[in-house]
Image 1 (cartoon, rainbow, N blue to C red):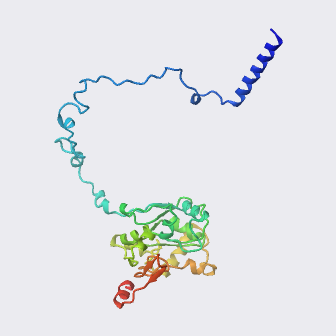
Image 2: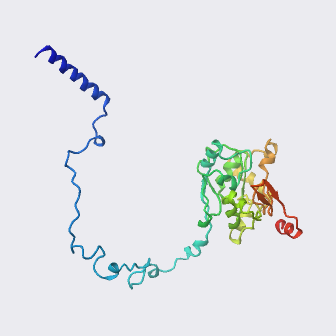
Image 3: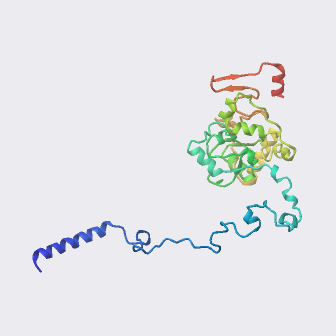
Length: 300
């Protein structure tokens, strides 16, 4: 072998080794079949030679007479064969509360989605753009869950629609306050899209009182209802701290005391805005009712 051939083979070997160093390793995701290995499937002739046009043989299938859901061609249908379950009575009218965990709430605060230096209510939670409230699905507000209660460190004044005892303890342990409040359907439609509601030119509605099936919940001091007696709430705060074994912070000595005890009126929908006012975003003005009967209606 000549010297030139030896040098050429050496260069080719070095080139091949350098390519192996840069190319990815051989794996199932970077190989392909040999040419002609994959043959496209051909359409078969069919059983009837195409004279049925894919509709089958006689009957409702061929005539495309689609049967209604639940019909069993004359048999006693499934929903009639079994006895009626009273648990599902009125299920289409039941209120639902989409969950929001304490872990998510802490994340909202850490990422400045929610301002913890101001009272937090359903409006501020919806304005984050991360909480989806669908009134047409009978959603009635926020259900604050205890997921991430051990890692929740924020001191907040929050208003939700449903909360359990561990959630209340986790918030009050940090020196915060919590209130459970009810919103009727008309108010929820206004809260869902505030910009759209204000552009309609309608007055801010007054919040209705809760119905009888949840009136006891929102009047109870144990659940921190917005219709409960404040003295009973102070007593229940102390009882809950003794039950869970933490020292109850004195919110009276807190520099943010005014923010922590700030509450809405039971008829009020937005902080700083009274029922009956009309907000004009275009003119940046607030129109207040002047007639006595309107003042009496919205203040009652």
